[in-house]
Image (cartoon, rainbow, N blue to C red):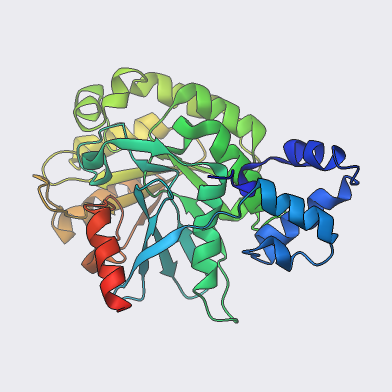
Amino acid sequence: MKPNIKDLDSGEMEKWLAGRKEPPYRVKQIRQWLFQKGAISFAEMTNLSGGVRSELEAGYSIGRLQTLRRSVSVDGTVKFLFGLADGPGIESVLIPEKKRLTLCISTQAGCGFGCAFCATALMGLKRSLSAGEIIDQILEARRSLAADRRITHVVLMGMGEPLANYDQTCEALKIMSDADWGIGISPRRITLSTVGLVPQMKRMMEETHVNLAISLHATTDEVRSQLMPVNRKYPLAELIECCRSLPLPKRRRITFEYVMLRGINHSAEDARRLSALLNGIRAKINLIPFNPHPGSPYRRPAAEEILQFQNDLHGRGHQVNVREPRGSDIQAACGQLMVESIETAGSEKLAAHR
């Protein structure tokens, strides 16, 4: 297979062009065709010479994800199952709201961090995605929209741990946020969620300007280590100390995500401990009532228990939101993404076109 041109960074593309005595500004032209105009063939790049287009065609491909399934929820949420060129599948979720259209994208096929409440963990890690494959989720979702709609926000909260795929994720973030030749989504409208990989968190906040969300989910090391094995490497004290030291821009907050599991992590004492942990950090708390998935032993707390936990935190001065489940009827809500059978999805698509 020819390499995907979307996986070349600017320096690599400029070097290739220099070898053909082409000026550096051609990099911008090619990238505009790829990321702004959504070109799917080199022939479309009409401001390049025929010779350059032919050489690009000979050496590279313009990779695309195959849309194997598109599921629409009763609430308007859309889940895409995309097939990668070498076989694995990934899922992305498009979430419409009154004033925004958010796309939740994946950075890995599966995940290797084994969070006990998450369906993706049951897949294990298949592989990490390239920058081009991360960006292609946005491009393919964008192609599905009517001309008057556009994706306004991106959250890296789908399959996988973004910071375990650090270099490719950061390259994808550059493409997403560049308004000159990239997709042009402001970093203020991009949020990256992590299980808490401390060294990579520090590096990311120095090298990018996107929003950070931390998957917390417990207030003691004992419980968090049971729910999230990564806590054994980066326990709560180290994680929270890292959060305190991060160079947050003015008016920015770190989001702490907290999946609520019945009888496990939402007591009055949990509220007290969570408040103490976050004391002094510019933070907002997203409470996520557990979204059930097949085979999970966990359950969602009752509505009054969720409200009580929220009120306990409000009473201690915290900004707290309860994330309403979106797309749960199509297994598209937080923690539900899992590709059970890429072969089945491919067969369904072929049957639909017969």
